[in-house]
Image 1: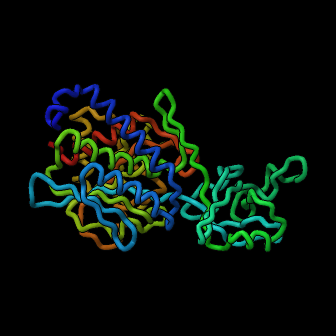
Image 2: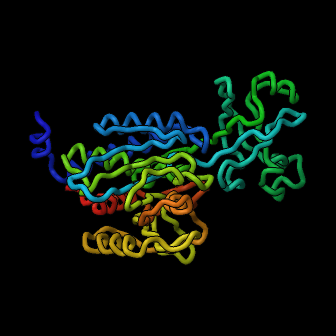
Image 3: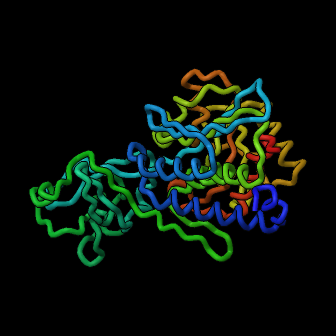
Length: 358
């Protein structure tokens, strides 16, 4: 059966279910790869394979970003969409005399939420060890301050699942300062449609962009203008968007904020009017709001009080473009995050409308 015949036989409901299945599978694949900033080779390879399977050309920048070229129906303007596949993480800072690993943050993880989390330690010679992130006062039966000791870099460490008694035993395993410590995302998709996992910021949005590629292949559609989908790898440390392709407009797709003084929910796409770096392009934001209203996309317009994006990084680097930011509402960001498939669907729909797929 040819592509055209397959599409004619695919009902709208069948298409929706197929897109949902592809989105969930892609999200699981991305979340299944440990990828703190600076340690993203494997997740980029997974994303690149998915993009190429949809028939799109890719390239990698010197910095490690994945750029996917999507031909347009018209010339005259270039459009960029970006999401990031780097995540929060930890790195070995030192080894204690007792054989515990002291760590430093990669990005801004919410350290108190990591107490008791399982993790993997990656050495530079390719070994992988398991362990647990713990308070240095881990036992209520022993330490008086087990409940009250601060959960921060000075007071938390990694217990290694190996027979080690001192610093020398740990060094003999090949573990050293600078090794990455990656904690388990614990990904779960519930029957009710909730997606619970660490690192939905921003692998949920990256999965949306890759699903858009699938949608274009399945429907035979293309954006109005030549577009570049970029998956960046340094967003969590602030400069992921500093080396994006030159475009006239840039739409960053990153998690939407949920909380006090904000309107967004997990079931919506959030359109950000302003974040910590200032307001986004008024015309682009207005156009996104209008599209969402006209096409019935469940959305919220919000201001993020403690936030920066790759679009902001692009502006700081000197890129001359209009820029805006959208993304699925994510609860408990930088902790144990949660969103809903409805929010991912709304994000996909708004991004497709923005691209003027036809």
